[in-house]
Length: 274
Image 1: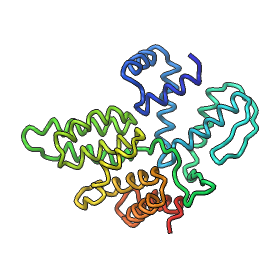
Image 2 (image 1 turned 90 degrees about the vertical axis):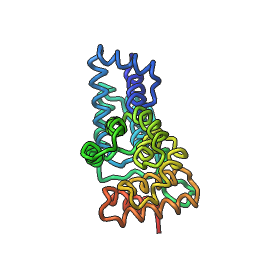
Image 3 (image 1 turned 60 degrees about the vertical axis):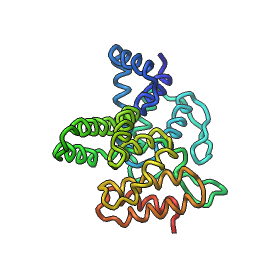
Image 4 (image 1 turned 120 degrees about the horizontal axis):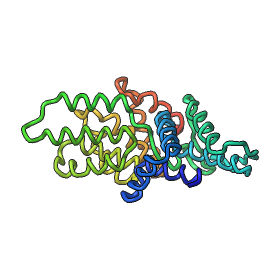
């Protein structure tokens, strides 16, 4: 199995885009191939360090790295051509290049369209789950009292959030979907399902689930819903969507209790919100 194929497989595995039969075969390969297992862990570490940077922009830079590995020219995310030379140890160097990009935490990658009226996040793929916040949610779920017969709901939510935290979005979705059907008035299953679907790049469906929660003042994750719905609006790539995204980013930026406050302020700048 060649390195580039490994890369694509690992990406699809971690982002929950691998069919069950292929997933089973891949997991068997992991148990037998120590190098593949090491590559998987390295990729998981890279995803874990992305903070709120756009993974798709990282991937475009990795594509440049691939071209460098092959000694080819490449075009970067801003359309600038890069002439490159071929180094040794191709796949290991590719990971090193990605790691360097991840360590540049203070840099926000944005792409400006020539005739666009705003700067938005292009081809968004994944936002890093807020691990600390998820841990608090899990602790609260385990500590809270549930009515008789609802212990299974709590345990399922805990499992769903644990999958979400580990970037296993398809598994989180599979747990959240039936909970959403069983408990339609509970915002937590709806929220988990919406975030999982968002991470699987189904933005219209994610919007339908999360948008009502942006108005739920008594929901403890309202700010998170607002932040992700703002990204959904950006993905619609319309003037109205841009204005709505700016409005939501502004609300989160003004919320001193939100863990997304700083990221929302960055988005106000990146999107040229006035």
